[in-house]
Length: 402
Ligand code: MG
Figure 1 (cartoon, rainbow, N blue to C red):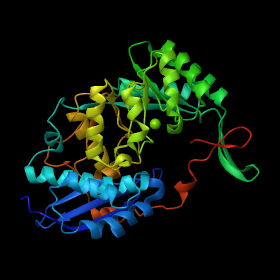
Figure 2: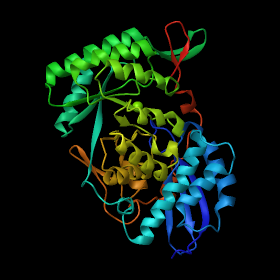
Figure 3: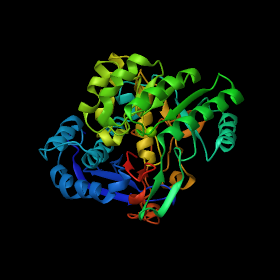
Figure 4: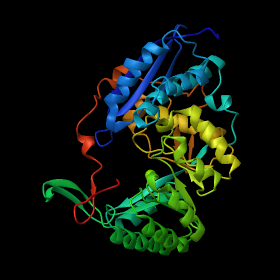
């Protein structure tokens, strides 16, 4: 079996849910009849560019190589363009990498988590969302999440301190209006309301989405101490990571960081100086299961736990990859779970399942998930509408980190 080689590589872009972004699936076919692997390469906002890297550059490099040599292939893809990193290339690498782990699991007759060291737990506890346009709407959502059995809930109200602004509001520019001071004030009110209504047993989370300048970020981290958060996420933009030294020294709020990371230089000092508590990477954006497992092991050495990114711009294949890591990493912290829609469950048979506050894999060899290409073809991509998404503007119209 070690002589099984890559025979063909295909990339699919689809959009099964109208309100969600494009998804990108990579299929690696092998010289062994019927043996193939599936990977997630979803960088929704530049999907054609990812497909071009996989099909125009990786495919000719990989046809005929042995599927068993994942580590060698990962580094070949990383170094073969001389310049490396970035979300387009790392997602393209991820599509191949996750598919090769899927193939290896199928060849071994084992779920991928067994190849990664075996199960540390029987399922992954997840956090879900309570969003609302205002506090009463958010509290209703919060109540529903509790009724469903959730124990960890991310709180958000409004659109970060301002409404969506249609074209023309800022001299012809559209976007979301964002006021940092209003946002902080509204978040404090929302957290007060949740603790008042639901008490202290439930775990609360919040995602700042890298929208604060460093002094406001420090103020928010200190204000949140009274609410005893599970974690405060992406308090700063990756470019401002060095400010975590100040925040860590002055606040006890647990910190999660990293869904925008693509390069180890963005996180190595956060680990070695123990400046964060949870690593939030989007595993396809760092290159797939291979680097994510290494990152988790590194985190274990520094007392940092995993909290892999699990939004809607991840295929069910990517969600399954997150879960195989969650099962097998001793330092698993929590898994974000945006959910998998009914149509995605049809297109991707074998999806992980949510029961109560925990998501479970099906225990089948490989990732345990399949892909119905014919059904997927009925949901073509939308390459236009989502490129407008991230336009956050300050009250004076200045564009801001998304
Ligand atoms: Mg986030």
